[in-house]
Length: 157
Ligand SMILES: [Mg+2]
Ligand SMILES: [Zn+2]
Image (cartoon, rainbow, N blue to C red; front, top):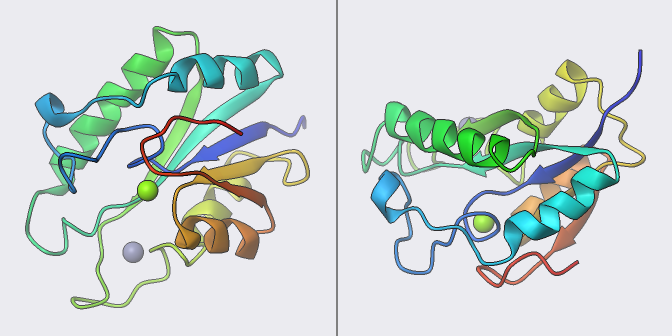
């Protein structure tokens, strides 16, 4: 079976601008960082597909619901699709350590490991783009390279 080349993307601060709202759970609060889709198209041209890997602890804290995050992700999938970008899957951790322990919240690597196994990802050529140390740690634990960018400045790797 052919292995997939995947760019793993953190959501908030990387794809979605969270400079005005710490938690993004309403479609009307969702803005994309500038230049992001143009950059992702460059990766797509090189044969990459995309997977979202996001911590959404606002769910554990009762700020919003799983269904809110699912709606946001449906919108993101549509927005990728109309640009010809293949967002093959999206993972989010709804937990927070003050409420419960879990293995999925970054810097843990379970979400990424699941995705690698499910989608037959080629770890050698795939990588993660995040805006926090926990993104980098999670990716490296899962055996991927990782790039850390400044939040909400676009993808400039
Ligand atoms: Mg982030
Ligand atoms: Zn979790």
